[in-house]
Picture (tube, helix red, strand yellow):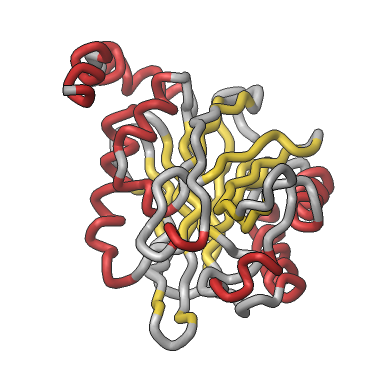
Length: 270
């Protein structure tokens, strides 16, 4: 892992076979193993990587309660390889059966927690129920916040996580190729304005002959500098991240210190 403040992080970029969990999980595991062999201790896989994104007709059938098959898979991979693994899956609420687009985090000791996507893109509003909370999870070496795909364009979410102490915000994504201009700016902006690391893992390929994903997964430092970036093919990117740099950059540009919470809240309420 390097010094106590440094570790290697990875973003997995992959395409999916729609509705075929077994094949998708096998592929993801093989790509994760490549990241592990490169020394990665924190690994992020894309949004709905286990099912594919365009499975709207199968959402109810494919969704799982947490923990269940795919969450157990996260825990097994994390335990076997002594890593922290994050990705987004279809979740079915055990309480009311609602379907959520949910990020799951697991570590060597098991399931750490989950986050339900709050800001839904386009037709997702008819597929999923919105989440309500912005949890931050203590990994021991860092504090982790999770957002999903489209939410990279909502700075308030990342700011809430940063104000709760997040050092790293991950974005499991199924971001479209047609809007990569937004991906390029927003991923870097979220890192810079909050003085934290962003790990954005995106799908690639085309689903249903009409939805083409943008790839371009990336790892970004607190200055907004892209440390590693994928192209358009399936790929594993790995970069060392230095968590002590979070504190240094937040001192260099003290956005969080000078953020006027009361004025912001007043502005939203007026």
